[in-house]
Amino acid sequence: MTTTAKLLPRVAIAIAISFPTLPSTSLASGYYVTGVGVRGMGRAAAVAVGSDDLTAQYYNPAALIRLDKQLTLQAAGVDHAITFDRTDDGETFDPVTNSDPAFIVPSFGIAHSFGRDDLTVAFGLYTPYAPTYKFPAEGAQRFSLVSSEVIAANIGPSAAFQVSDSLTLGAGVAYSIFQLNQQLVTHVSPLQFPATDDPNYDTTTTISVADDFAIAWNLGMLYQAPDSPLTFGLAVVGPTAYDATGSIHADFSRNTYYVGDSLMGKLIANADATDDDVAINITLPPIARAGVLYEFEDDLEVELNVAYQAWSWVGTLMLEGTDLAVQIEGGDEVLIEGDVEFPLELRDAFSIRLGGEKKLSDRLRIRGGTFFETAAVELDDESVFLPDAMKFGYGLGATIGVVSDLALDVGWMQAFAPEHEVDSSDSYQIQIDPASGIIAAGKIVGNGTYASTWTLFGAGLNWAF
Image (cartoon, rainbow, N blue to C red; front, side, top):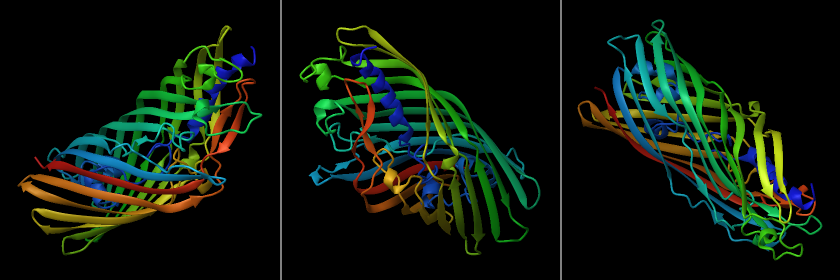
């Protein structure tokens, strides 16, 4: 293989190298703003014990015992307003923001007790809330991320069984799907020259993969001593393994080595290259939630939760089946094959949440809550690719009786990562030498000022039929 012929295969590997840092809202990046459900966001997700609708399937399946017969339909919007003002040795860049609108997430479920006080069975669709991202195609952030959409959804049965007067156990299993669509830019230029932000050397890379069948599961318990105002809860979500298949696409149409106006002339014969049969194996980590709820005599309950996500447990991401055919100018087609394994450098994250609700009348309940959460990435690893940071937030919500058995839920939640500076970033531009095919770390592209606001809002109907 000639040195020129190495270019396209190296680009495919560069795409793979960039993938382990993919940002996936409540999935791969590790940050946990809330779980699911309009009532949950109203209490800042402090519902590991006190969940009283179908979202108990997600938080703690043992809490389904609170339900008799219920049908739930909900829709929520998720928005991440992230701003990044890049700095680079005094060079000035225009600040960039996520321009994608709020992503709408539906959920539904049905529960039935079959006339029993000790059993509730449920079936529903629930998905962790996740925003989408879209930044300027030639913005200062493009070497970290241009766009991203990551979706995971679970659908299946859950059940709660009251073992004794004090103890209730719950379990759930779900058919789970996973989809990823992501785009970023690599830099193709000779290594003997310093890497630049010149868009003439840009190569846009896109990865699109999906897993249409995986298994997710969780377990839960509630404990309340007779006549006690305290209820304790514990829930564990098992690891979920995804084997997502799809394609990697490299777009050279704007690159000087395809256009042919470089000193080396035209090196790349085709405007793009695609491998339609790659697989990415990733296992999402186990999550543990624990809480205690206190019921006051005046129709008020308050709950304290902690949540722990073992992101360091994930460890490795595997890219399999790389088989990229490349046509080089004046040369033969080149084939790159092989599997690539990458370690992940995430750390465990935890949150503490305090929330509650008050019954004001037979037709009105109000909710509120607050929380604090640690980041799943080190400060120096933060970028728009990994938009996670230490954060705090609040939630507000209400349930309004429409008719005797039908209630409208509304919820609002925000989380804030205050403006902070990163001045020793480890996030770098991927630079590929067109003559040797060598991949190197180009410019540092993650230094600058970051600020984030997550906003979640939603509405739902609960019918106690």
